[in-house]
Length: 110
Image 1 (cartoon, rainbow, N blue to C red):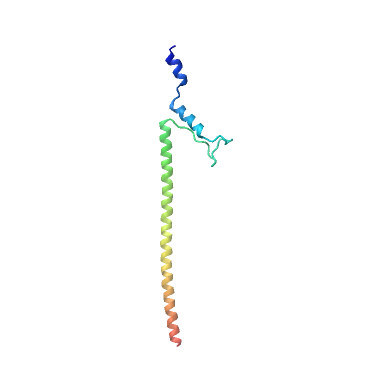
Image 2: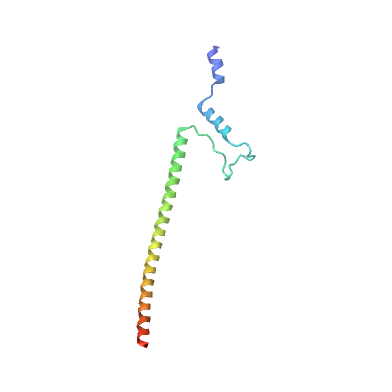
């Protein structure tokens, strides 16, 4: 066996191993049950490009679905606001007609 194969392979870490070590080092150690404060399991390190692509696509789909939900909500809110403005305008017109009628009746009494 040569020095290069025995000495270097034991001390070298792959990028995936470095990521795992870095992730473990940055996670708080006070969590006894190994869950995040929001109840989710701790993040895991993904080094497979296919898994990364799948995760990214899932997150993009999630964002797009939330964007669609928000678009629907905003359109519904705008429709409701339009209806309220229309009803308000009709009520204001009715109030103006009633005020005019009251004035006419008061003049007729005099």
